[in-house]
Image (cartoon, rainbow, N blue to C red; front, top):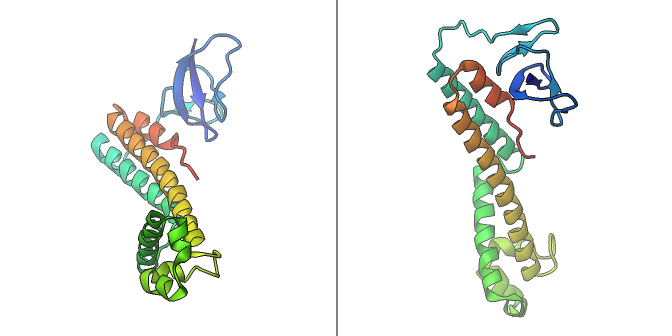
Length: 186
């Protein structure tokens, strides 16, 4: 039987062939027969999406893709700084952390305080505040960068897939359904 799957807002996000006893994935419910992807259940019937503002499918896809980009940027912003000079400081701190990491723990810990400040001024600011040694500070910065990199990669993958699928949609409803079904990493 052709079965519409609804999200929490009543939007049909998929239509599947399901038999008796089949249960939908988490977060979705089985809708009444007759709905198509992009339709909205109002409690009585399915309502087709209405775009009477004169935009073409291509324009709507473009607008949805722009919304995807904005959403990705907003999520990234929740995990990064909005200050350009602080971002530059973090970049330099990461470069210095990599240089310390390349030296090895023994060589890094053998440096005098003057050598640390002279060679790694930004990273040295963390010693005694965020970490006990230059090596520990470097490892902390590298770990934070790796954490950020993994999250950023997850966000980028969701963004690219969503835009690809929106652009592949053949109807406004299908494009809207793709947008509505996006699940962003946090």
